[in-house]
Image 1 (cartoon, rainbow, N blue to C red):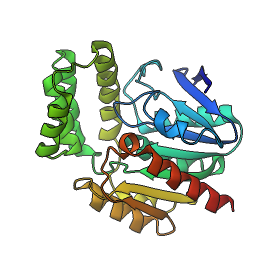
Image 2: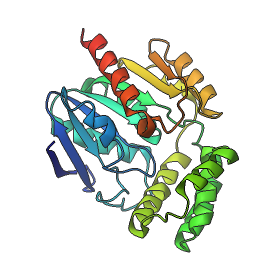
Image 3: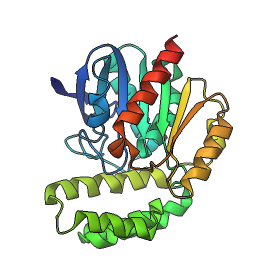
Length: 272
């Protein structure tokens, strides 16, 4: 399978690395926090026979450039606008986790550029003024390169239950993350927290979406994500919804087949 990596310039000049594979109707895949060009490749690989997949590394995540100033959701909507402009025709937009939050913002701002919107568990609860003190603590930990302290802040933000944190640590065993990759992820998280702190957590703000929308979630994801997804579905009553038993917030990695089938079915219905 051939991948083409190239750069797109955002309106403010920030260089965005983009990976493209496949051919057909364009689909833009937006990764979540801690991700990058590699994050949604398993999903892309299951769609590339029918679609042209565009996978940007969001600003702050190498090999894209780090934002020159404090990052905002508006900046990242502008980045997606630049990518959609490069595509040159309407596309399906798919976002996972924080990438789903950005996808919601983009669908509200640029509905004419989209064929559809699909969001997997946007963490709308993890935004707004309550994030500001977490951002301050994370920045301090980042500046002293304290990985444990950064990890603790992110667990507090995402509200991962302690038993799951323990299980993930046990599964990792003695494996140590690649230092360069860990730093790349830490830089990206820092800038995502900046944007989250200035965002609005109210799901009702999405009640005016006009783009055909699909809401995806795992049945086993911990609170407050289930309540957040219920509120989002109530705010967008025309949205289709798919819930996967036995899956959690890690489903894009653990169950790309389920996600690919859901997206193919959704795309087929709206093109119909």
